[in-house]
Image (cartoon, rainbow, N blue to C red; front, side):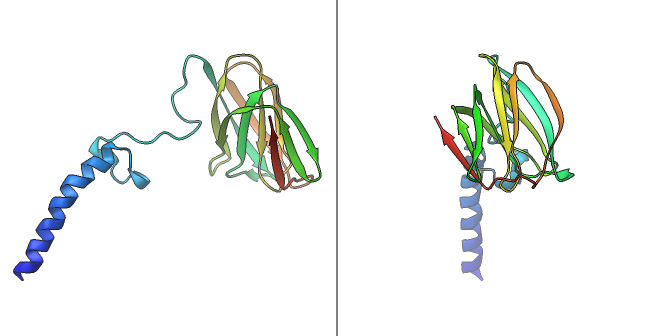
Length: 156
């Protein structure tokens, strides 16, 4: 019985040393340790917006239902083509995020000129928004599996 208590005390001591170190290092998997004061890792596209960016948000629907986990790519002067069942994006994407379970997204966009946005999910037709220049809500955007594309290619 004494050996078991020694082992339990040893394990409790190790956990007391390791637990705070992992929280403050940002390893808070699932947020279960959130109340201990550690910094939470940032989520791409959801962090604070710096002075050189503005916030654009919207909601994406595919065939009438919220489109979950659709990719949102942002860049300056993007040229988008569809060929051979592939969305081809020419230009450099400098921002990326994804829609949540309700089809909603928020993305910080740079203020260095008009920005373009491509929203795409495998099997759906892409949505292209050109010339975004100010913060705002793009509202409800719709796509469908009709004309759906299954591949994506980036060319710089």
